[in-house]
Length: 516
Image (cartoon, rainbow, N blue to C red; front, side, top):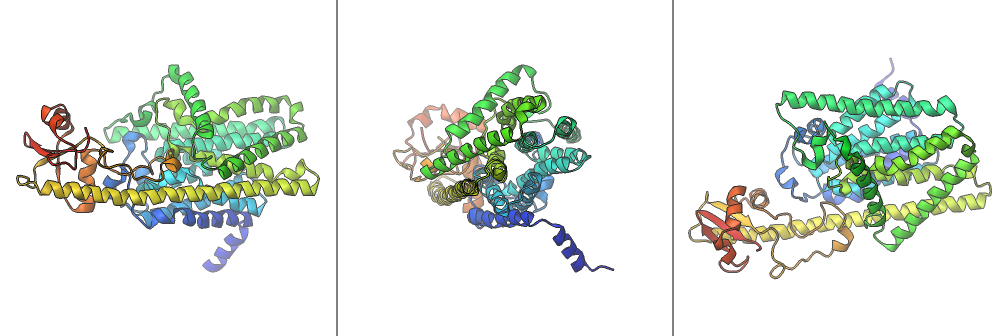
């Protein structure tokens, strides 16, 4: 009988060295990039009331999120959640190396590094209470493509993987779609022809459509069992019925969001080094693809030309599929994670450089340029990510101090007693009295969830923050009561905090006027 240790080494020996390079590249880069939020408890608007939450987000169309997050318990555990997230990403990077059939160990390592450092993860780590569940969704989306690609009947388990990924977080559907597009574009550069070229496309379609149907049916059943419906948040009500009349608008918004991220957002072009590196990588990708296309004589194959003309326009649509389904949704950085595949695909193309450049010195120079540009981009991702985490720490400290001042002033009111209703009105503090001290604004303007001075701007957020972090309990006035008070002459006459009279009792409700 073979012992467990021998079985382990047998499994280990079957694993390709490129897989290990990607895995450990992701693990090391992941800890370098995200150790700060993993060892602290930073806050966003949402995380304040998610210290313990079952993540039952079925009304947002995420019926499997509670099970994905339940692996690490329903507590907000930044370290454990972060470790699991990096572990899932490390497996994901190894799957990507296998899916793209990478041979170069350096490029495999860089694949792991990019997987762990792409800026969208910064926004995701802002919500550490759910980071592990979301990264499990990414793993499932990549696994769906990989098994469909590698095995004849792999689209069947692929359907399950896609459905589960969608049921955790819908935006990662783009991950699978984009992988399929890039995989088919690679096939065009190969010697595949006719049936061998087209069959993978049909398997991908079967996996993608079948996965969505699996997601659709399970969501409908689970909504019926729980006797609830979709909230409509971020267009989730369109999951079950999207008006076809809005499809042109959705496609327009998808293309627009794709272009704006590349040309306007500072996430990929935050400094001169990133701009130069991005230009180098884009030029290398376009040049290599065209050269490989010509080398493969794909221009002589009508099927390959048709597939190319169909696939290229699908790239912006597939990478922002959420906009197609919900044109009015707020498409933020957290949803941009599939973009990491573009950077990885440059490495895939660079791995084929010797097919089109026979002179070793020129080929080596191009490889070094691509490698250097990728390393620079990854390093800048790490720097900007840690700037974001730095600001989140500063934001927590400022929020704590500000909330403590408000709580102290409220409790000092002679007539105030525990149980009185309180309405904190006005949003953020008035700049005249509390000027912004945020020194990271230029860097973080497109980093969703990480910027700003405070994490409170309404009564419920102040109340939750005070309860969780000051051990001060205040009873919130209802939203309807707050709306009435904002329109009252008493509120109009009050000065803003911290002036004398900025805390006042009106009709048995204590008003704290933060701003006008």
